[in-house]
Figure 1 (spheres, rainbow, N blue to C red):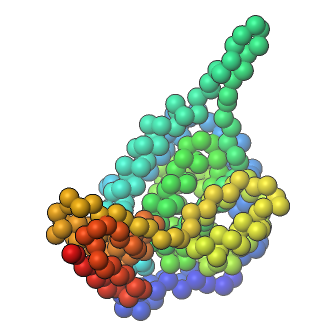
Figure 2 (cartoon, helix red, strand yellow; figure 1 turned 180 degrees about the horizontal axis):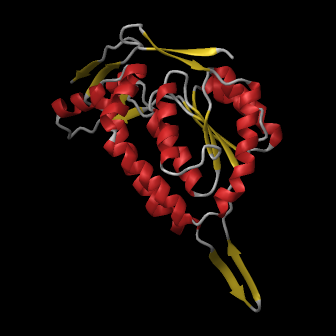
Figure 3 (cartoon, one colour; figure 1 turned 90 degrees about the vertical axis):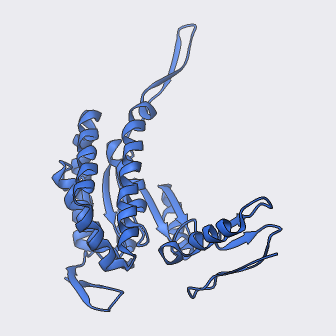
Length: 290
């Protein structure tokens, strides 16, 4: 079995050598997820809510260590790693509160002996291919609601956040989620390519436009549920009545937070006060005001 080398981007040191999944192990994890998913879906919703609440609490109690792992492999400042883990706890709270009313059966028609209602069922086995820039945010946006609603998840973290992906898996398993219901796949893009060849019931991908195109071409003929969050350009409009100093600071933070690797980072600024705005690939930002 080949290995994945995890490197600290701050100093180039090797942190870990991890076994990389291959076609056989991916197929085995998919088969196990298929077998385990019906029983997971049959469990009372409150059981699943309790497990995800335990996962949330574990994030809070172990934030120092988890943030250190995240910083070591992605290079983001430790404060921002802690912010991301703290932010995920808030998102989990939202899903814990929203899942039951969202999936509750709704009667939409009951007249003259005809009754119609809407009910919700799990998709089945979900492929969650996550990104390196916010592995807790990006992954949690998928695997938390997927697990709560009775799906099994094959979670493929970015190869640049593999250790964090394994930590997420450990915490979920300790919280009671079966290993076959949430399985972590380790490796580079070839592992993601092999994953989407499996007859999964949904694919959720966050990453580049080019990779999103390849996934769409692969899944289109199969009519599999697909959700893509891809890179783009994000503008901001500066009103005439703003405090220029505060606006400039906000623009700089919006452009450079997490080294600019954010889904909603500021790339362009518009407004009567803004006469120049530049954010090239290098870490420089120039804002000019009238």
